[in-house]
Each structure stands twice: as C-alpha cells, then as structure tokens.
Length: 326
Image 1 (spheres, rainbow, N blue to C red):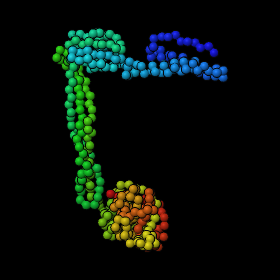
Image 2: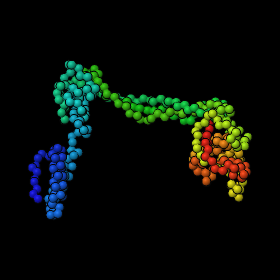
Image 3: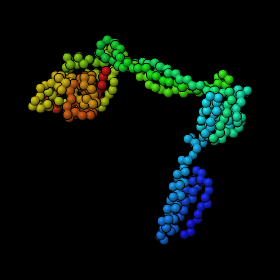
Image 4: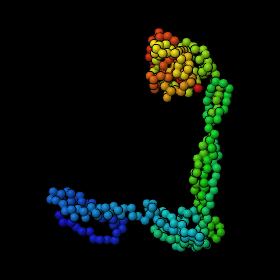
C-alpha cells in the first residue's frame, strides 16, 4: 500500500481536527487492506501520532465558553477582561449594562463588529464595586397536630437567620452613573422556626387517650368503632399472644419490654415501623398502645395482646387495617 504524506500547514485547532480525521481514515483503510500483508511499525506509529496530535489540538481554543469572544474593556481606572457573545461593540457594552451617553467616546465605535481579542476603549468611564451583606429573617413554619389535653403550642426548632451578600458593579461616565450589575451569593441559609400547634382530641372523634386505654383494658372485639381522625392507615399481618409461658417462654413475667402489663390494649410492633407509645386502632380488636417488641415482630406485622391461649387461637392470623392515631 502506498501512503500519502500530508502537506505541513500552520498548526491551528482546525488543522489539528482535519489531520486527526484524515489519519483516522488511513488507519481504518490500513487495517482493512494490509493487515494480512504485515504492517510497518514505523508507518503505523506515524499515523497514530497524527491522530493523537489532532486530539491534542482539541482543547486549544482561545475561549473558555463555546462561541464566546475574549474582549477587554479599558476604563479610566481599570481593564476588565470578559467573554462576550455580542456581535458588535454596542452589544458588548449592553452586556455590561452600560448605557453609553451620546457625547461619550468609544473606540472602536458602537457599530463596529466585535472580534476575538478586541480591546474596547471607553474614555471618561470609571468603575467602582460595592458589597453589602443582608440578613434573611427567620420564617415560622406551623404544623398542626392533635393530642389529649388542652391546646398548646410547642417549639420544635428555634431556627436561625440566614445571611446573603450582594456584590454590585457600578459604571460612571464623568461622575454620572450609566449602568450597574449586581449578583447575590448565599453565605448561610435561613432555617425556619418550627412550631407545632396541638389541638385537643375529643373522645367521640379520636378515641381514648393512652392513659385511658391502659386503665380500661377493654376486651378486644369488633364492637369498637374506628376513630374519625388518624395520621395513617396501614394494612398489617396481625397475630396474637398472651402473657404466659405458652407465648413468652418459661421466664415470662407478665410484663412487656417497655415495663407495661401485657394483655388487652397492649400490642407488639416493630419500632422501626411504629414508635413505642403510639396510640393505635386495630380493625376487629379496638384501641391499643404500642408497648412491646420482639425478635419475631418485624416489618409489617403486629402482635396483639390477649389474656388466654384460647383467645389467641381464636384470633389466629389475620390481615387487618391498623390506624396510627395522634
């Protein structure tokens, strides 16, 4: 196979891209045509070098932004280098938010085409910068909830103020403001003050309190109506246990892991699903308190407290709706 040498040209990014493309085609042709005949390592190395040479030229662009031109604005007290997407000098100054007065002198003129590397001279223009920090006041977030007892407001988190900084660039012509640019940065985010407003639960709508459930120890059954208000309803697998050795082993004490007396009105749950001390309503069982846990009670399962083994067998295993109450 004959190889065709490329003429040397001034090395620009565009030339690098072309060189890479041409030599990539040569590699493909070489692999398809001459691989069985043997490959000259010198020839192959030359072609691969050309490919990498082209790729190396890829980032050699004079702009940090695609399609942008690097332009310098020369003011009386400062030179500002910027990337611009404008097509004219006037468009570049509008990007800076500068309103050029008719009597101002700008070189090149406003209608001149903007090119990469251009310097724009603004006679009589100056620039100043200022910085100000402002406080972001604390907002109050109020959550409404219910519980037995009088209405009460409880502070959950005090929150704290935020802080932001405004940086302003102001342009002047002969002492008169002709434009400004401003940007803000958040130094510290505001955290809201969290407050819970507890309303009073009523027995008729919400059922008994935790204390009333543990005092009454009402016999379970479907005769207990569900509450009108609840946080969440879960479908759970419900089993039954009694406080004796049949359910709790030979060392059964009659008390739960939380120190409550086991039996009616106390159920075992997975604390990762339902917090200890939560008031519950279980379909077909009634009101109860989450007051026990065990190694076998995991996930979407609840173990209901009874007094006798016969009651446990009668209950068996059921899928029931469990209402998590306020």
